Image: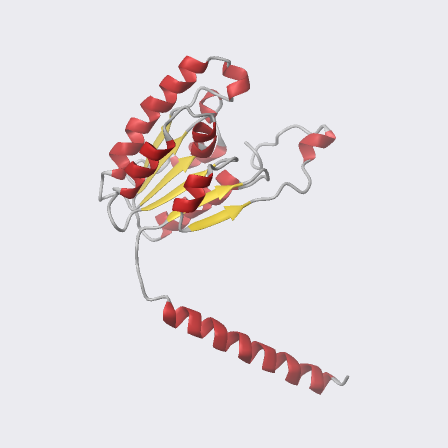
Length: 202
């Protein structure tokens, strides 16, 4: 096959692809507040959520962040986004991983207290995007009632976006979402005895 033939075939494929994409873009003519769910056993769920927080700030949007579970240690995300108190309403409501706390009543109480903060954000039309980090774990452990949580999310301002992260997303959460990403665990340094590294996992 000559270089000219390769180029012609490539151009035809790209023209066809562009036609398909252009048609999809033309058909997507609605705006609404999205519910995005990022789940799965792979690394990067919170990182993806905080990437969208950074993107929203780039568009001068107001953001609310509630971190469940991770309250026992400080994260790089918290250290960074707390630098923008006027743009980011940031709350850490967890007591640490469930295998560390080993206190069911305390974990439930922390989750319920945290959800009250979430509800205030979900009722605030001035907040454009809400990140509910590790909420899936809280729902999977049944620290909060999933149906009640979904009802509160459904009643938010029409153009407010919500991101839920964490492994083990309940099927009802997946069903309610507009966009769902499942991150696969292919390989992880921790299983080779390598500790969590600042700037990558912490």
